[in-house]
Amino acid sequence: MAPPLAAAVLLNHFFIVPTPETYEALRQSAFLRESFAVFEARTTVRQDLTYTGIYFYGDHTYFEFLPPGPGFAEAQSGVAFGVEESGAGARLRARLEEGLGVKVGEMGITRQAEGKDVPWFRMVAAQTGQGMGRFATWTMEYEGSFLDQWFPDLPPRGRGIARAAVLDRYVAKVGPPDARASRLLEDVTALRLALDLRYETHRSGNAEVGLEQHLLELLQRALNRAGARDRGDIGQRDIFYFGPQRTGRYITRAPKYSAWHWLDRIDGEKKPGQ
Image (tube, rainbow, N blue to C red; front, top):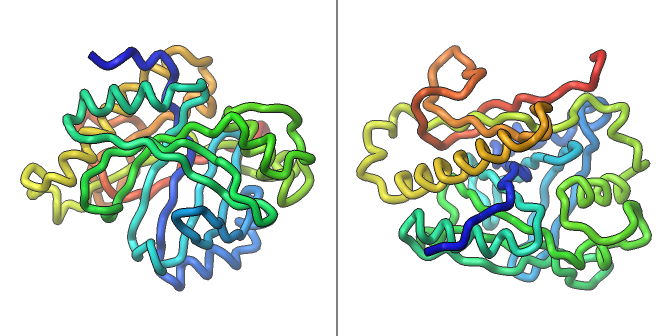
């Protein structure tokens, strides 16, 4: 039997690959870069992959847009969850293997800093043998040594694998440490994932759709348990919604039925008084 998870599973970030025209409009938006959130345009160099994107940082969560290109096709999207207790990723892997009935892999991801490959995080993901597909989801646990090696002279000082500590370092790298105080975004508090109704009737026969839906349902239960233990601040609970697409409507609370697929809404938490 798989060991108990114990640690909370939290939202870390999400990504979307829009059309080239939309990506360029997002990249050039003065509102997004200067008012909405702390912004970074960067190229990430890993041992397994190199990619360029634009990033918007909150206090505990962030999101990114990637241009279509090698490794990322237009209309792809994904959600990354995170754990903040050492060893929780390995325990989650065992739980997911038991719950999904498929192989779940764990691998180390690096990130280059000043020409050196730095251990960044441990990735836990189901191995479907079908590649990323249109939607990807995984869980990440930051390496305990990451902040010691990735621009260690920047704040915050000391070790840590909490999302907030890592984002503090990212923000310090691109601008003043207090830059977020003047921006609108605090955190991503909800995501809605919707299955295009053209594919909904076929999902029961699609192994990839069924597996991803099952995985999201398992993680949703973990998020619900985490939210019940955390304080009442919605930004800290990082609630995750997913449901079918309905034209002309926004789902503002958890639906009675669940599906998955396309990221089409961000509920951002505003600063007090704004």
